[in-house]
Length: 407
Image (cartoon, rainbow, N blue to C red; front, side, top):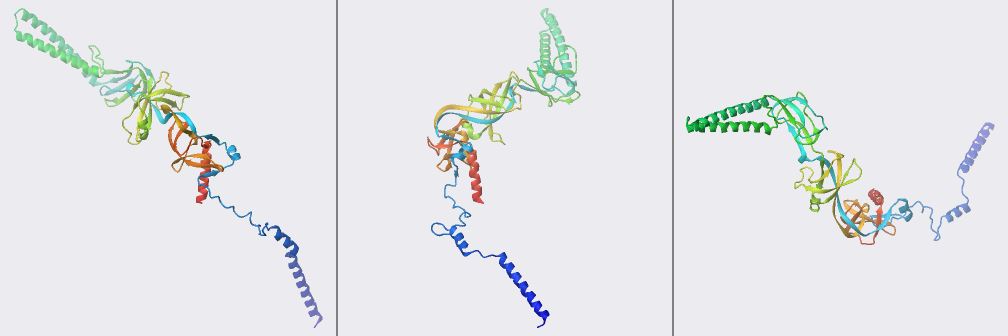
């Protein structure tokens, strides 16, 4: 073996020794004593290894699915008020949406008495008017003709009276025959009837006779004291009997109309006390139910309940939104809870009853309510402890639990 070959073999042996040393340095073996100590530290009293006990999920409790676990500290932190089921005096209250409307019995839509052209409009929307005040002037050829007819009828009546007086005198002097007097009397009566007919036609349309002259201008006047709530008429507009000129309403009284569901109709009636709350005004107004509609609306399937309220200061404006609380007779109810305690879960009414672990959703049947206390017909007994305030938080927690269970 040559010297060069010996040097190559020695170099290869050195490299192999270095690689072996590096491998042993990267994966050192733990001492046996240390391995024994670590293994023993994870054994419990029975010799079982508990190294993975903390990572295992605790077994779920097999409690009621409608239960919510909550400690006393959590109850206080969430602001959940606790109360007991007890008797209370309840005046049943039916809460209804409503709207302020014009008193239709004191509202008039004025139209033109005949075809014509609007000459001028003498009032503005919202203006207060007095009975007899001029509102709109219209030029109408038909009105001129009617006035001319009245004038002609008056002239014929005047002539008929003269003829009758002459024939009467001649008959009394035995100059003329009786039949001439009878004919003059008949003509007089016909002339009187013609004048009355012409006057009544003008009067029925609110047209002034205008003395002995003939004019085509007719003035539309206010039939009552009120306010102009609508005024579509403008100068130069062609109008006829079918087109409204303006609407006047007496706003000293207004109607509060509420929508009543069909299932609530047996519990209400005329004369029932009511409290009206208007969204734009502070406080509530006292009134009485004046009318309950006998027919349900085709689209709403609700009846109309009406309260009439005085409105001398005109604070109540037609179109305002309001709400009506109809108050039934007060009575002592043995089993009641706070109204805020009643929640709806899957279309069922529930109250969260206190348990050792927290709360449980108890299904109940409710009865009368005044908005503050609600009668419990079935599901609870006097003295039961329940969540009176903040029960919506329990409902939310229960919903989260159900959602997690579905997942």
